[in-house]
Image 1 (cartoon, rainbow, N blue to C red):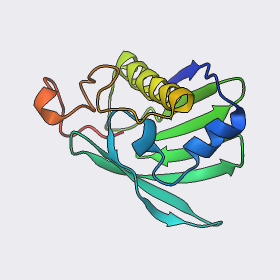
Image 2: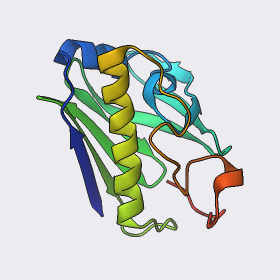
Image 3: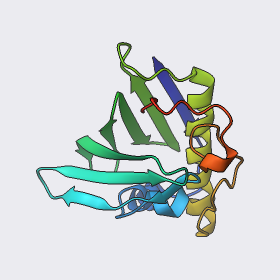
Length: 154
């Protein structure tokens, strides 16, 4: 399954790159992420961790790093591609044979929230708040979840 989302951001490509490539970058603009520390970060290997407000956490392994343009990362069963051109595009490619089945609409909503957060932060410099653009059934705090499948992974 391939799901993509893009957004026009009124900022230079360099400014956007500086944001998304910074240490702990998701803590600046991701409306569902509580912590985003780097685990290993050098020329040969880049791995960070993502802890969501709902308590789920995942490691992300960066498999391609293109300075100033974007990166590809692997997070469980998905390869996620970030690209900067005249805005930003995030593409999520989920392997078909996996134990995680997420509705494509939910994934599109998730990517849209992430990009709206990036746009907001890049254009205003103001940190994005938890659930700033609405709650998400999989990624908002657990007390807000109504149909969370504990065996789900991303």
